[in-house]
Length: 151
Image (cartoon, rainbow, N blue to C red; front, side, top):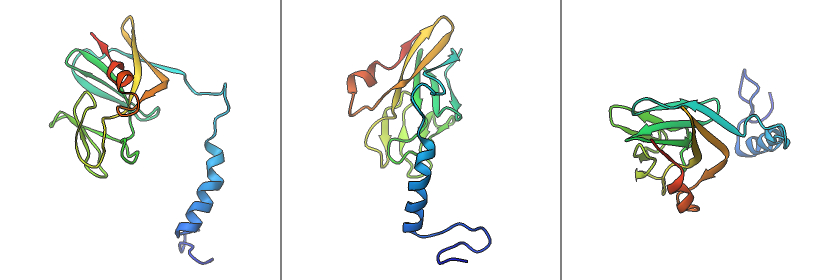
């Protein structure tokens, strides 16, 4: 067993070992242009207020007060997967308890802005999410505000 190796599992612990491992793995996540999984994703329009989480594509589709939103699943604070709390009618980050309104507006916690929104359009009875257009409330406030579909 090498220094810092986890007994029985072969994993190396420690900051330097972790960073070396991550640098080696980062190449695996590069997707060559043209090989993108999806430029757009299409979802059926929700018929009532609620949330659909597509964890495979890191997208949250929400209908709230006759408006459709498409959010990144990642909390803008530290990229932890957000959760919908139906009993509280809000999103919440399980890591640092940042809280968000159903429209993605920041309420409280360590985050400093609303949830990131994807551009979304309506196509007949579907919501079409543009995976290439993700807007931050702080960096692109006008685009962020416009990233919704009124029903």
